Length: 159
Image 1: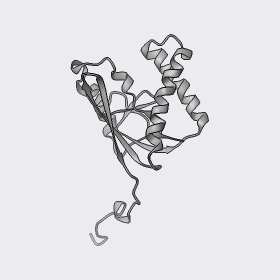
Image 2: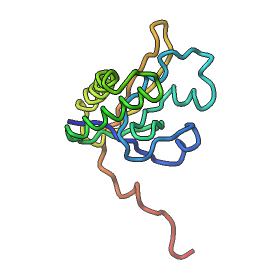
Image 3: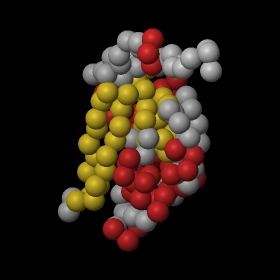
Image 4: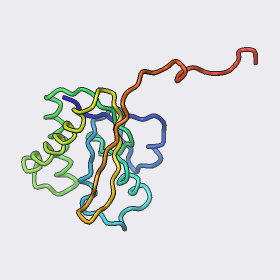
């Protein structure tokens, strides 16, 4: 089974999101946050979170890129409870028992998305408002073997 973890290549997420996700935390799409939004809500950092932010399950923060990786079934259960508690705390779900099936579905959708990709595949999300609500599309960037030139420091020792 696979899920996605937050990954950062630079410090940009620290500047563009109100609450950036922590590197390595498990993530889901998180489109639920925007279900009642209108164009008027899409300003500044909130617009950035809406446009392309994955939702970190531990911090509730956002991240631009996630990487597909293996996850144990037991971890899914823990994450389901964590997300269910988020729904109770922030979205008014009556209790964890009522929120758990919705949280489980959210995680199942992310597992389905990740299962079709090799480990270390990078994923991005793009959202737009439509007549029917929030529309999400996903892009994958397959893992590649790293070449030495990606890490080499170019210059001269004579200088």
